[in-house]
Image 1 (spheres, one colour):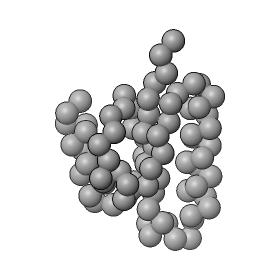
Image 2 (tube, helix red, strand yellow):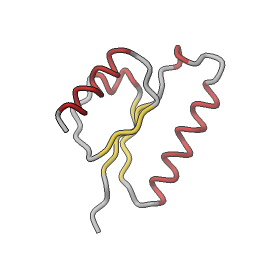
Image 3 (cartoon, rainbow, N blue to C red):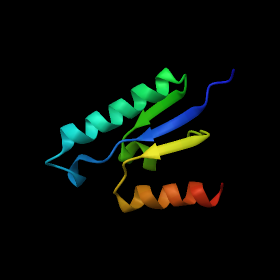
Image 4 (tube, rainbow, N blue to C red):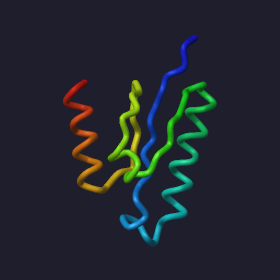
Length: 79
């Protein structure tokens, strides 16, 4: 069975300075769960994602930066 390729975008630290640990825990648990389901996860920060050219079937994110959100909207518009 083919693994589903998924990009996971971490939230920038400046958007939750008092919850960095909580954000990391949520993101890491999500990645762990998806890997147990045998998904291929590509992890990146918001800054990395803005320059990203990697393709994947799905994207999950915790993004807040407007440039990241615009890129996510562009992916969504393209299907």
